[in-house]
Image 1 (cartoon, rainbow, N blue to C red):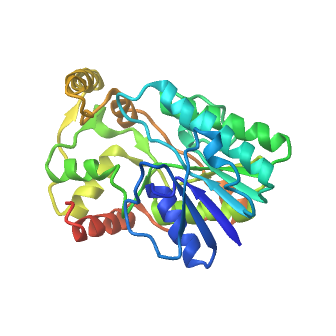
Image 2: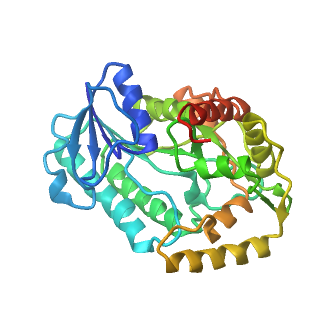
Image 3: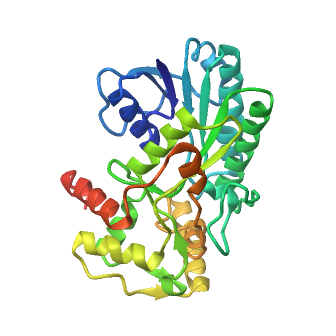
Length: 324
C-alpha cells in the first residue's frame, strides 16, 4: 500500500514516516526544495520535492496513492505575516486536496490543531466546540479545516486529526522550554495555574494513524495526552527530569506581555526571533484542554504516556544528542 506524507521533514511528519515504514508501508515523503530532514530516515523512504503552495509542483504526485497524510505546516512564531500562514495552510491544503481528488486517493488525513478552538474555559473541549481561533496560526488552520470540510462534503474521503502540543525526541521546537527550565530562566505567569495539554509524539502518531485507518470522512478527532496539566506542573516535571531546582520565578501577565512586546521589537531590529513573544505569553496564560473521548470511542485511541514518562523520554534523547 502506498502512503504519501507531506511535511515529511518536520517533527510530526518525520515521526509518521518512520512509523509507517516500520509497519511495512510503501512511503513517499514530500519535502520543499529548501527542506532537509532533521533526523536520518530509513533508506526505504522515497523522497519527492514539491511545494504545496505551488499547484504545478503537485501535479501527478498522488497518482496511485492509497493514503495521503497532509502534515505540511508552520508553527506559530513571531514576525511571520498572517498571509504566509494562510498561503501555506489554507491555500496549500486546497492545492493538496484538489490534486488528491484528481488522483482518486482512497483515504486522506489532514493534520490540524485543537488551537482552532482558541482558549478554552470550563471543561475540556470536544470536537463539537465552535471554531474560535485567537492568533494568525490558529486562524489559518481553522480556514484549512473549512477547506477540508468542503471537500469532504463533496465526497472526498478526508478526515481531520487535531493533535495538541506535541513534544518528544527529535523535536527542537520546545527545546528552548527545556533549556529555560535547566538554566533557571523559566517563569510562570499569574501563578502558573493555567492549563495546557501536552501530547507525547508516540501517542500523537498512534492516534493519527488510527484516524487514518478507522476515521469517518468529514469527522474531526482530538488526539491528546491523558490529561491537561498546569504550567506550574509542566515546569516542575521538566525540572525533575533534568535534576535541577523547580522554577520559582512568577510574573504578572501584564509585565510578561510588556516584556515580550519589547523583545519582539528589539530582536526584530536585528532580524532574530525573540526568546518570548506575545503569542507565547498568551499560550502560557490561557487554558487549553481537550477531550480525547471521541477518538477513544471511534478509533480505539488511548494515550499511553503521562507527562512524567514523556518528559523523561524527551530529556533522555536531548541528553544523548548533547542538547541539554
